[in-house]
Image (cartoon, rainbow, N blue to C red; front, side, top):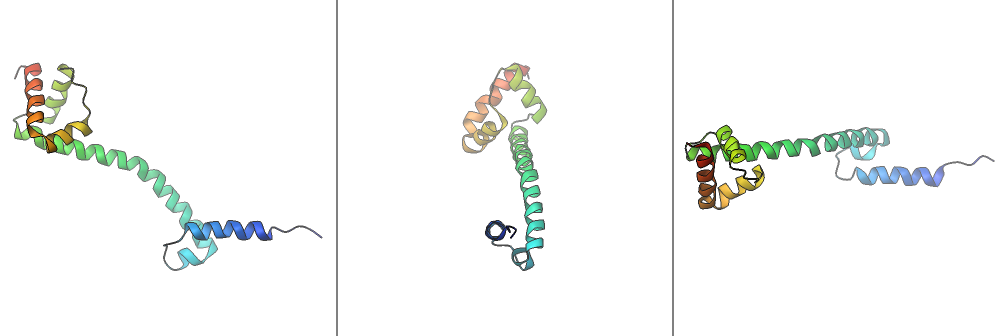
Length: 118
């Protein structure tokens, strides 16, 4: 008698259905649809892990741009001034400083303007 996959297949299917918990309708009840949906979900997850990094960088740049404009400086000038002043803070920490501690951000802007000779 030939061996069949019985228990292993049941286990594999169970794993798929468990991963599809929370999906609606056939996307959680039908094996073929579950497989398709999980494939697509995985593709979106992979893509969006990268997109999240871009989105956050955009947010930080927008915040910095707004903070710089309040202090009569363009974002591009600010970044050029940071490099000239040899200030090694990244955009994330700079945007946090701009929000949480405006006085400290003013000090950074003063350094930047001095480096740019504005």
